[in-house]
Every structure is written in C-alpha cells, then in structure tokens.
Length: 398
Ligand SMILES: *Cc1c(COP(=O)(O)O)cnc(C)c1O
Picture 1 (cartoon, rainbow, N blue to C red):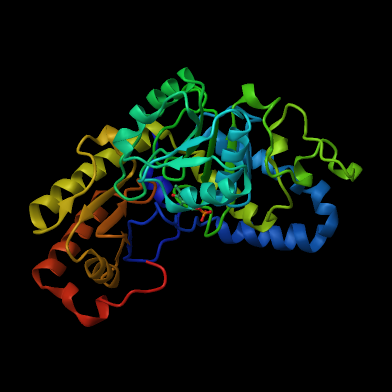
Picture 2: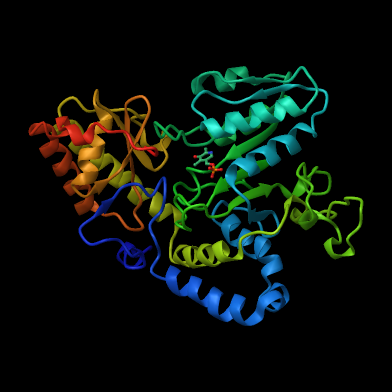
C-alpha cells in the first residue's frame, strides 16, 4: 500500500496553501535543492568536461528515460528524455509518417492541446503537398479512423475536461487499418496507470513537469515500441542519435536498433538532476493505489461543489473511469472566480473559454484539502467576492 502521508512529506509546499495545480506544474520535492546543489558542486564544479564520462552525463537521457518509462509500463531501452514536449510531438509524428509513406492524413481531435496541432501544421508545411490534419470532436475519433489515415495523434487525457480516450480500442482500430498511433501522455504519466507495452502503443511522448514534479521546463520523453526500433526514422537526426557520435562523421547513421537514435543533442544536465530527485518520490508509489485515491478525492470534490457552489457545473465525464486526474468545472465567470480562489490560498487554473481546472494529486493532496478548497469556493461565491475589480485583470499566463 502506498503511504500518502509519506509522499506528502516529500514535498516542500508553502504552509497553508492548497495546491490543486499539479496537473500544470508539480510542486518542488524536498530533495530538489540538494540534488541541484550536488550537481553544481560535486559534478559541474569539480568534474568539468570529465563529467560526461565520470558522472555518466552522456547516458542520462537513457538511464532517466528507463525510470520515466517504468511509470508507463515501458521496458528498459525504449524511452529517452530530453528536449521539450513540442519537439517530441514533432519528432514522433514525423517518424510515424515516414512509416506510412503512401498516406497523407493525420487524425487528431479538437480537444488536443494546441501545441500538438501547431507542431503538425508546421510539419506539414515542410513536407510535400497533400497532407491534411483532421480534428473531429473527440467522440468522433473512432469513426474517423480508416485506411486513408497515416497517423493518429491524440492526447489520452483532455487538458480541459479531463476526458480520457480508450487507448487500447483506438490502437486496435488504427492498427487494423494500417495506421500508426502517437500518444501524448502529458496528462497521463503520474496521473493514471498506463501500459504502453500491454496496449501495443507505437509512439508515446510526454513531459515531466506536470504530474512528475521535475520543475518548470523539465525534459520531455519519447517512447518507441521495441518492434519499431530497427526501422524508425529519427526525423530530427542530431549527433546524439548517431551510431558513433564521436566519430564525427559527415553522414548521419542512426544508432542501429536502439532508442538512442531518437536522441537529438546535448540535454540540460542541471534539469536532469531535478528530474532524478522527482523520480525518487515515485519509487514509493503504486500507480493503482494512486488512481484509486485520485478517483476518491475527485468524486468528493465534484459532489461537494455541486452541493454547495451555485452556478458552478461539473464539465467532465461522470464516469470516473473515463477521466484523468483533474476535474473541470464551468462557471459564467470562471476567470475572476479562480483569481479570487488563488488570492485566498487555493491554486487551480483557468482555461478558455470558461473552465476551472483542479488537479487531484494524492501524492500531496488529501481529503481535508479538497474540503477546504470547496469551502473557499463557496465563500467567494456567497460573498460575491469574485466581482472585485482586482480579480478581473488577465495576466500574461492564465
Ligand atoms: C502541457 C502540454 C504540452 C506542452 O508542451 P511544451 O513543449 O512542454 O510546452 C503539450 N501537449 C500537451 C498535451 C500538454 O498537455
């Protein structure tokens, strides 16, 4: 059994703050400052360039990749970390497209996170004419999978509503018509159990700064199924993916048969030190315990909000099995309501056009936090506090 009191004690959260935004940016693990300091003082300062060998910096893309992969059921040697998620989306989709050269349709949905769609739009400009990106409603995706589709690119958990796709059903259908599937697991890893091996995923990508708590701008990851590693085109062919990076050849030759071919260039080793500290927390967590607890807390929040907060309506699927680990509500004035909650020590966030999101992260959130958060929302609504001028102003980042 996972001891959630123990995991909670592993985070350094400001006293009195209720943090329901671990789905956007996880909080700082207590071990992070020492990990960073140790990287600075015991690695960079003392080892200098030797650190690439003596501290194995060069292979941390893979050693940390294996630890990240474990959280989504990936066997060792199929996941690497580096770069940003937008880059990894581009890389995965272009690699996937080259596996189906006679087809030109990329299928996504209109609930996907915009950067994923933008990256594909940019990619299409670089390719021959004739490519198209289809973005039906999420519920229409299954029907839109046919033998014209080259790549199905989806985010498992909708960043707004929390609606969760049925990964296995979509993969099975896509494979039956010869399409390749790229999954974005940004809102899945560390949030819901994922089994990339068991569900026969082709490509998966995601970030580590949301539910994994590795810090703002932490490295992204890419997973490629073992059965594809011999043939997959790296798409972004950098020297880290070369068969012999230190041969300094003028021709790119991808690392044969290995996930290493998906590496691009020099990663941030400083950021890796924070990722390593964040991953240590997960050594104490059973994903099924976490899922059960996250559903229990989500159901509590939905029930309490519906009972006590007039005008606020639940915006996600009722069936908890069809949701990820955040809950979304609609309110006519969601933006100022959320600003007023933040000013009163409850941090969630807002997404256009009218959605309030709350990340339900049992690693550091318990029943009391949920009840206090709903108390705060209720008081703000009853007192009309959200109407104050200062809560209407839009910051650059919402
Ligand atoms: C958070 C998120 C991103 C962010 O991409 P970055 O390159 O890290 O800015 C991309 N896709 C999805 C689905 C996300 O939820």
